[in-house]
Amino acid sequence: MRALCWMGVNDLQVNTVPDPTIVNPHDVVLKVGLTTTCGSDLHLLGGYVPTMREGDVIGHEYMGEVVEVGREVSKLRVGDRVVVPSFLGCGKCWYCDHDEYSLCDNTHPKPELAEPVLGYPTGGIPGYSHAFGGYAGSHAEFIRVPFGDVNAFTVPEGVTDEQALFLSDAVPTGYMGADFADIKPGDTVAVWGCGGVGLMAQKSAMIMGAGRVIAIDRIPERLAMARDIIGSETINYEESDSVLEELREFTHGIGPDSCIEAVGMEAHGTGPQYAYDRVKQALHLETDRGSALREAIMAVRKGGTLSIVGVYGLMDKFPLGILMNKGITIRTSQQPGQRYMPAMLEHVQKGELDPSFLVTHRMSLEDSPKGYQLFKDKEDNCMRAVFKP
Image (cartoon, rainbow, N blue to C red; front, side, top):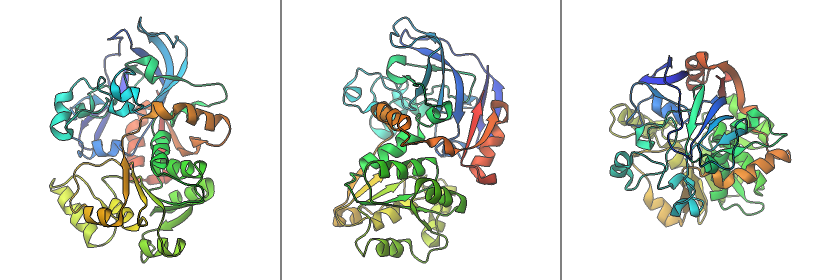
């Protein structure tokens, strides 16, 4: 089959690779219907996530059709249209039993690569380096899904392929961010980032009862999406004298009740701290540019909640003292999409949530390297490039 492969830093190529097969009796194999770029993939391209190997198939946000099932699969049939959360759960361990599927004990086949860094391995994720399991990714004609009954959700009638696609990762990550923000009716929520996850966090915050949602970004087209499609108030930090002062004005001097950081380790920013981060990151003395996260910590009101859904590694100058002295609650995780899937599907069916507007570029798998270039460089107003194998 054809698949998009990581061949080195900033080098993606479409190659012919072996077709996936049933390995364990709980596996299913999908014919990939749609698969999309994700901001966290850019960390792989830039070399910031270790243990990528030449030839690895990338991609983790996808939906498709079941074409083969293992003998222990009972809920799925060949021909079912399904969506799969990016992190894989087994459905049987302590973590899955407590709805913490992204922390699954049984879906990481290479725990020795994660334990030295994390202490314990996470669940596995397709297409995201051997430190997260080494599974072949979704930017391919076919993909193997372990524990199919746990991880593959049948897409109901009335939900389109493009809507279902983003329930794999962008929507559950944003939805989790809003869930973690402990939103009370009428709360003010500030969200850093107007990419796919940030926009879904904004919409989810509204669904969960936020009175005001304020979006912070620098790209006019993305800020326009936040305003015109989501209904958020917006701040362009490159045009602002002080984001913190603007947020104080929005909130009568108190600060947002909750802040959601949806940017991650390659955040842009301004000023000497941003220059410091860029130099240290270039020299591989740290992995993260923490401008957005530090600003969110400063901005959240005393006693407020900080929800972190951006992907991070090692960051210098983390302001722990500010968190402690302000009494801030922090929630963070990789998304357990299985926990949220029933609610997300219901929101889509009711017309309360439609993530399909995130699709700005539709391409074949053969054109996927070009799609990633557009996505990385934010050219041609690219929000998400979607590939149809």
